[in-house]
Structures are given as C-alpha cells and as structure tokens.
Image 1: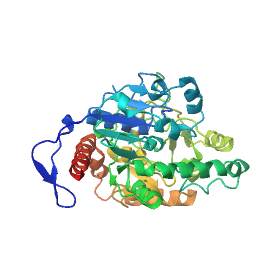
Image 2: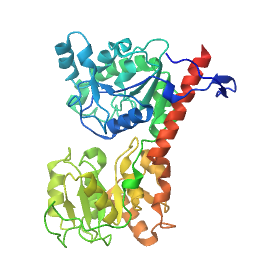
Image 3: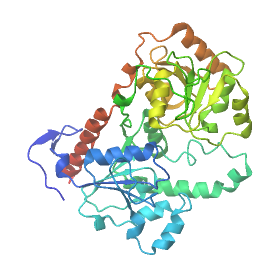
Image 4: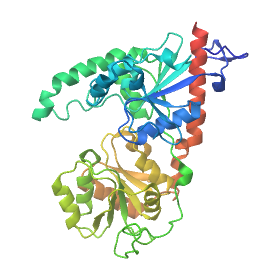
Length: 411
C-alpha cells in the first residue's frame, strides 16, 4: 500500500489529515456487466483514464479489448473457479451478478489502495480492510425502488415480484461495503439518501463540449452518401426543424412528442435506434408528412443535426441524468424538456430552454413559448460549463484524494 505523503491538509471535520497525491496510489476501476458501449461505460472509461487505471474490471465484456477509449476490459470471470458455470450465471441478466462480484478476490490484482466501482452490482465486492471503496452511482436499481410499482398491473410484473423483493434485499445488504458514494446528478444523490440513507457528492458525467458545433455546419443528407434533399427536415442550415435524439422507447415519451407535432406545420426529426415503442407509434411516424425518422446516426451526424436544428425536444420521464439536454445546450440550442428528473432541474426557464409536463398539449405549449420568447440572452452554452471533461477530472481527483486522506487519518 502507498505510504502517507508529507504535509497535511484539513479534513471535513477540521482535523489534520495527510496530503495525498493520486499518482502515488494504486487505483482499480470495476464496472458492472457491459451490454454495449453506452453512457455509463464511457463514464467508467473516463474514471479509469483520469485515475490512471490500466483496465476496467467487468463481467463478460463484449470483447476482451473493446473498452471505451483506450482502456481495455478485464473479464473477472476468467479468474474465478468454475468459469463455464459463472458464464451461464452471468447470462441471466443481473440475478447472479451480486454473487459474482462478491467472489472476486481483489488480492489477486495487487495491492490496491482505492477501488472505484461503477454500477449497482459491483458494490457487492469484499475488499481488503485497507482498501478504500468508492462507488460511482448511476442510480440505485430503479425496478427495486422508484419504478417498483410501474409494472404491477401485468402478469409478468406480478410473477416477477418475489424475485424483485429478493434482489432488493440483496442490494440493500451490500450497501455498507461502499465507503463513499459519488452520484451522477442531484436526482441520484436524493435516491441514495432516500433508499440507502447515504450521503454522496455529485460528480456530473463528462461531456466533450469542444466537439459540439455552434456554426450550423453543412447540410445533412437524408442518407450517408446520398445527395441533399431539400424536403427532408435535416436539410439546410436555417434551423427549420426540431430534433428528438434517443432510442424510440416508451420511457422516452416518444409517442407524446410525435403527437405534439401532428397536424402542425412544425417539422420534427427523430434520430436514434429503434426501441420498444408500439408498432402504432412507428406507423404514426411514417404517416405524418412533417415527421421523419432517421434511425441510428453516427456521432458526427448527431452533432451536425444538433448544430442545424431549431431546438431539441426531450421527453424522458424522471431521467437520472439525461445527456441530450446538455448536448443541445453545448450546441447553443434550446432544449424543451420533461419537467421531471434531472433535465427539469438543469433547464432554467427562458435561459437555456423550457419545461413541459410530458403530454402532447404540454409540449405544444413549450414550443409556442420558445417560438414567442426565445432565450433571454441567446447563449445556451453558458449552462453547460460544469459538465466539461476538465471539470470532471479535477473534481474526481480531488474527491478520491480527499477521501483516501480521511481514510488514512482515521486509522
């Protein structure tokens, strides 16, 4: 383990604590099972890069090397006994994942000073008593807590109740193995306090603000390689269309967004993978002349669409964080967001966007307010500086060093 550095700083309680240099610490990062390279695993990659970890420990990654950025994954199943059985367990969603993490012996990976876990199930790790465990919480498992009553009316929901109750008990039992929590937004900090009775510090996920364009850019063609289509909502640079980004899922409120534009002369472009919305919603999108679905788009295409649009419409309900409104503001565009969850906290009415109640009528009202009043100073980018990668890295290093110094000073 690392020795204490010379010099001292004041701890949270005013007592002296040893100063700590992150470069002197051996830090490991673990992330729950990776199902695809999404927002949470990108945050885990940023944590690993910032703290100098050489890999991300996880369960059954898609490939052995396809980590975020240049950080590789390490599959902990390879180091456990009865690996084929463990792989079969890991394939059953999150049911056995608490037990898998519990059986990982961190002494096999060296003398670790700090273990930073990302996601709910790695909180089950049993570390050596001289290893500090910090968890970056994307959310307490929502089906155990704040969304527990959402599907109780279905037969599948009722049949799954006993399993959810067991897993909730399992989840609560591992909570005390975490020494400190970092939350990705004030919404998650509130849930940590509500469901675990734990305090936390908010550390927003990093957003590469410098990559977002504010100059309008070139017109975006309907399909890659095809000539521009002047009738397509994404054509032109005059802000003639509204943009919805994200998977076409029920929880994203896509149907209400589509209905808000139906029968109007406003143009709506939907961009994102196909999700779980009903067939009738997809048929409705196809039938409306002023609504178009682009499907999945690349990062470059997404940033071009953001730069060219008039504003972004976002209807995710009770979002933990929700990066789309931040991306909209980083592109100097207003975002019209559902008033629930973190996006409703992020948007300051008339400054960087407007809120709505998630219904078609509420969305139309927000659209009318934006078209009538615009933004107060015309600069939506001012609302996103706290989400920069530089801010994330500085704050993360400070928090880890401070908590480890307190850990050393305590004993």
